[in-house]
Length: 326
Ligand code: ACO
Image (cartoon, rainbow, N blue to C red; front, side, top):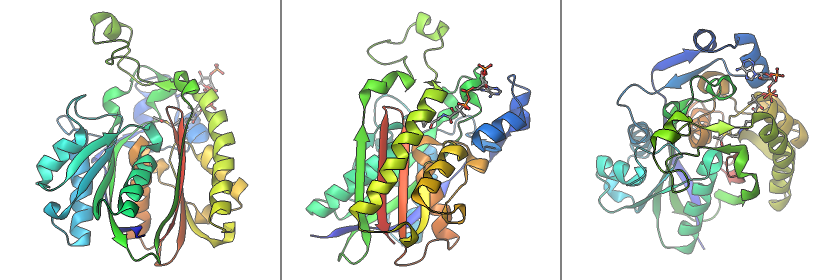
């Protein structure tokens, strides 16, 4: 059976920076509060007319160019997103069209901040089954379009961006060793965007009630996240017969520095072996892991044969881990 190997990465963040000082002028908050409670200093915001598929396109073309591949060599395109260009069609179809990836099927995955790892699980299964040989997986979000800029509980957290990987069948000595995905829909009320679906279809009332924006019970989500992630990462190591000292780099979803530190500490990995970019990017949901992965790979923080551990937690609730031999 072939294993699935990431052969190239790419990422893109919009040029506009929104700093904590900017947010101080928009809602009752402070740089001190945001930094202390989250670790975020600034986030990137997509320009007017720059949509999720445009962010995905920039990340995808960077990955394709690094791999020296043309888009028509792709068998499949998966986009993980909760902020697609439109409810129909899938953002992956916009991306396929713009790339000219004529031979690729394309679809989206919604697992909120865990979306990239749910996509990785899907790509891994397709490659291992022999059904597809080359897959483009992108995590892309324009969260700023669904952020309630009057709600200080959420508007300080999110940013826009995209990260992409190209995954190919390989001989088995390196590649994705495990991907574990989990969901618990009983927690759906902790994090959602209620309006615009069949439950609350588009209406003036839904708009007046600000139902087209992301809602989060942050503190409750925080507690479940810490508890769940601590077990998740320990299980991922055990499953692969690895020790914490074997992990060259932990690449967590970038939601909150306190969640990241708690997970690393439970695992026994020092912060020097943890990839953190949320100070610059904020929480970019499904895009956060592939952006961090691209930054780590292109800056030389991951070397051939290194073991890396990825983990995520998000709306659904959903959570996931992956262990990769690079
Ligand atoms: N500025 C100043 N004060 C604020 C702000 C702000 N921006 N936001 C909230 N506060 C206040 C609250 O009103 C509250 O005040 P009170 O005590 O007078 O009621 C106080 O600060 C504490 O609020 P908490 O919500 O308890 O703060 P907490 O320490 O939990 O931090 C945060 C909030 C950062 C949201 C944290 O809970 C968190 O990171 N949660 C997890 C997020 C997450 O992992 N989500 C999943 C992924 S996202 C996805 O899937 C799209």
